[in-house]
Image (cartoon, rainbow, N blue to C red; front, side, top):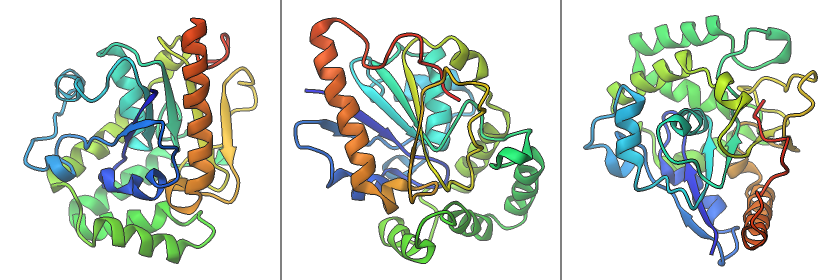
Length: 259
């Protein structure tokens, strides 16, 4: 049985995956571990270094799995490829090799915009967190409905300590996985909502990269388009299962890097 590991992003715990879980086939083994400091692991300190984070997540991020990292979860999962045995493949949902973009024309978040948000977070963490939730949902077909969905799942308070959130913002600012993506230890596929306000448009010069979009979705397709996203992940998981017996990779050779 194929195993999917779903990893959540900044300020949101594993409950974000509940709408998706009901749409995934029952023949796929799915786990949704929380990052240290989040959700069921709020009593655990969030590590500030990747080596310690890798040790904390080693039992969850198994080599015989397909990792699906959403937003900050994708950024961290890619960085952890240097610290843990590589999975069968990695899917980056709403994330590329880095969070910020230096080309504002491609959309996404610029370093200055992230710095401004970080300043707001230092002044009022709760207000900044609530603003971020609305910001990331602004590309969904019905942002208000998506926001109500999210509140019903995680509540109106952050599912993490402010210290954990601050560490996450630091990772969003400084982690750059360009080198890993250029020569990855496993196939990497990026999946983005076509109206994602936080993810820059893929560089057309990087045509060799594996990148797919989901129509009528923003940064949170697991809320707005769970059936479509589930279908994409199920197809990848089943492809992996078939290729496993053929002793091949689940994604085509020569097209693994993220963009």
